[in-house]
Structures are given as structure tokens and as C-alpha cells.
Amino acid sequence: MSRAFVTRRIPDAGLDLLRQHCEVVLNQEDRPVTREELLRGVAQADGVLCLLTDRIDGEVMAAARAVKGFANFAVGFDNIDLPEATRRGLPVSNTPGVLTDATAEMAWTLLFAVARRIVESDAVMRSGRWPGWGPLQFLGGDVTGRTLGVVGTGRIGQAFALKSRGFEMPVLYADERPNETLERELGARRTDLETLLRNADFVSIHVPLAPATRHLVDARALRCMKPTAYLINTARGPVVDERALVEALKEGVIAGAGLDVYEDEPRMAPGLADLANVVLAPHTASATITSRDNMALKAARNLIAMMAGQPAPDCLNPQVYQT
Image (cartoon, rainbow, N blue to C red; front, top):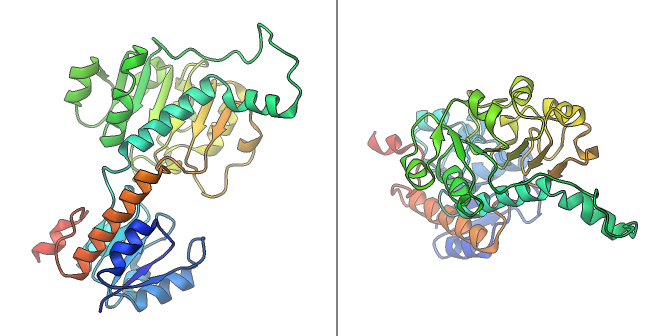
């Protein structure tokens, strides 16, 4: 029987499916595996179900002598050296589609929370220090009718933008390719990043992490934004220069930020947690029961196919099947 190494517990829906097809070796502790545990686990496996916290590089692939593929429990795959996997003929998969709405909803959650200062006001209520209603308390930013800037309009960016219809927001977007759906449904206008930053009241990031997008939003980009604007990031932490963001928030370069991802997870840039004008979520954009169950099922189905020598449904490097 094939053996699957699962680097951290995932929802039972995926584990139960895997167990119907193979032996499952599971990291029983609710934490990322250490490097040593990862190397030891892949050395004894026929397939690996890994998480975004696992660095799957050439060293891991060399240790994975019998492994027939890596199924990543995430949409992003910047934790995996995809070119090296392709060179070695190892298929790699991700879990697209099933967390699109959940992530788009989280971006809206952060947008409203920071604009309307929900975390700040919640803390005052819990402290017992609220003196009663006042006309100048917790004044925030308006949303309806304000300009929305969407950076990256793949599945999640598009879903996020489409959810703006109820708020009558003009939409600007920056992407390498035109998005006909957004232009048709919203009258969205494609523009370059700098123009978007200068004109948007809310900027939401939805690009994958790649060399070209690392620190895409840096100190210069932040200074292009309006002092009344808000930045939302549910993509990958390193897309934003987090230290530059801390300074921009301190100095009032922008009004606020809502973050679900961080440059050096699980750590945050010094000073970020001390700021009142940022809402901080612990990388939970896909954390709905349905989304995580479907991610687990999708990752399991991909790994089962790989171990059976069949093309994985969500293979990121299908050229490995052509050799």
C-alpha cells in the first residue's frame, strides 16, 4: 500500500479520503514540522501533502526518493521550488477555486473593519471605558461610492471586485491582462499600478508572490496613495514591504491597513502590533469550515492521483506528464 506523508493535521474530510487509498503518516502535533521531521517524513513516503509553511526545495526533493508528487494545501505555491520539481519530473498541485469567495470575503471584512475602526471601538467597549455616545468618536472612512483599486484580478481578485456592486464603487484594476468580466459587469478600468495607487480610496492586493511582486508595495508606492486611503492584503505578506508600511501608518502617509498575511510569518514587523490604524488577522482568509474541508478534499484527490501515476487534477507543472 502507498504511504502518504501529511505534514500537519488538515480537516478530517481530506484525511478520511486519503485513508481509503493509502497509509497516512501524519504529524500529530498542531505545528509546522521541523526541517528534520520534513526530511525524515518525505524519505519514507510515496506522496506528500504539504502546507504553505513547508519549504519544499531541492534538498527535500532529493530526500524524497520514492515520492511521486507534492500536493500543496494552499492556492499559493511560493513555498515550493516549482522549476526544480519540474526538472526532477515531480508533479506539484495546489487547491484553486475552493477558497475564492472565502478569501474575497475576508478582504471585505478587513476593509470594513479598518475603515470603520471596529477593532478600536470594540476594545473600548470591552474595557468599560466608553463614556457614552459622542459626535467625534471613532470617525472613519466612507465606503459607498469611493474608488476601489484591485491589484491582481485572478479568481480571488475578480470575486473581490464583483462584490463591490452593492456599494456603487468605481473600480480600477491593475493586471497584466484585461479582465473582460470586470469591465463588462462593473465598468472597471484597467490602469497601471501607480495610477491606481494615486486614485483609489481602498487598495486590495490579490497577486501571487513571485520575484516581480516581492515588495510590489514599497515605501514609494505607499507614498503614491492618498493620505485618506486604506491598504488591504490577503495575498502574500512579502508583496508589501512591511517595515515601510509601519512607517507609513505611523506618519499618516495612508489612513490605515487591513492585513491577513505578513512578510515573515508568524512574526510581524516591529511596531506593527502597536498601531491602532491597522487590523491584523492571523492568515485566516480561507478559514471557513466549507473552504477548509474542500481544500483538504482537493489536496487529497490530487495526491491520490499522483501516487497512482495519474495526472493530478490541479497540477501546476503538467509538462512532467509529457516526458
